[in-house]
Length: 198
Image 1 (cartoon, rainbow, N blue to C red):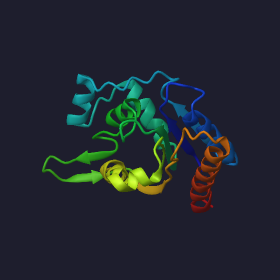
Image 2: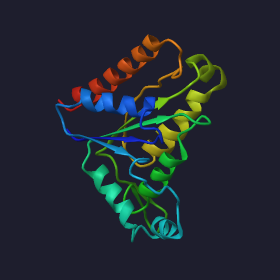
Image 3: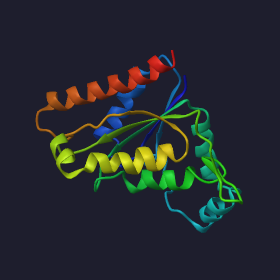
Image 4: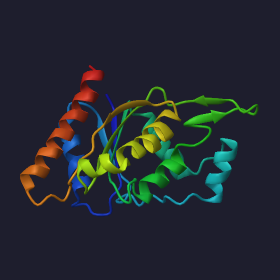
């Protein structure tokens, strides 16, 4: 089944890019595309044209329509990204701001009602974090992330939650520890996609 992997990291040699490639290779039996927002020079800035689209549900800019078409072709969307300041990079947030808008991801009725349009899509999240899991637990960062992204974005658009797999201690000095975490994350996401689409 079609899978779209979206990454947002400026360094093509980053762990983010490496993990996305590993995941693509693990899903090679199906149709897989990587959208590297940095390499593709996606413009994350929300402009007046984007504001018009958000308010009216019409006239999306051409680059936004192209991204929506990519997502429309997928059954699974996998967001692979570094955690910066306890959230996703501005590039990925801008992609969501501009692409997941009224008239496509959801429709707002004139009477104030709302229709969520992405029920056909399952979204998997692979945040890559420098801190260990204990820091996330002690300070509530994991729960805040789930509230913001899983509920605030995925649920809001009516998409189905897939798996969320944090890679903690992404800059661990022991390469084998980092590699074990990457291999585990790739396997969890691969199984979630291939088992549910079998």
